[in-house]
Picture (cartoon, rainbow, N blue to C red):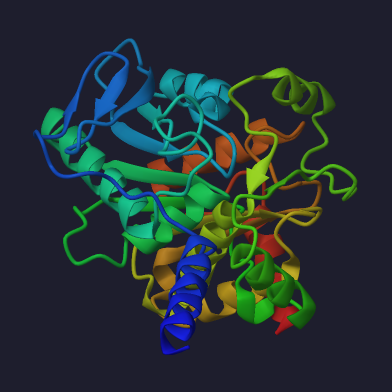
Length: 331
């Protein structure tokens, strides 16, 4: 009888461990991180596809752009081309689990994403020792930039640009949503979900959204454990508001249906409580979640270029003035 109880207990442990949400971190270090023409080779040997948009002349600044959830480096095609015309060298890569990067659809973990960004920043600082480096993150990419900036060994950068960063932390979600996510992640972590039927409008650029729908490298179905990992990342980013000391430009659209206003505005209020002089917030009345690809995207591009060139001056669009008004009334 005791043996039977032991067998049952062992089986339950095995079943429970088999249904835990997993992360799929990098392997052991096998080489030094390096850049090739079309790839960022990490220390564990992962080859992350790399895109670059370079000006015809010597750049006056360098930008590293991180894509959002289920997206990949192609998201920066139009803004990268525009910024390069303004003398900014731009680089974007497919992060682990996304695009054409290894372990497609699997979550590598917060530390892995932050470390890749740190390593690429070091490589580009070596390549461009005289130019300031800026980090730009869209949605999930913005959350990764925020968490990476908390690391003590993060290379110094001139500033960060957060485009609708993913800040929908568990503490700001309804209880039934967090409970359902926990239950699914700990019982059916492999279950694949899609966003169809939710009625969420990510952008007013319909042609761009249709192109994404046809793009095989854009992930359409997501494992529950990957959503769980993204939520861990959003928790960490949201909780970093008061410790974010970098020169910062944050962009947000009033029509954003992906990342709600409440957590975003709360984060902004907390972020501006420290080193407010180094923080610029821009809120776009006609902006959706995909601010850099919306119909009004060139307005945001011009604001970014102006901020890089003369921060903390007023933005050409006046979106920073609107942000001050909205945050004052929301507070």
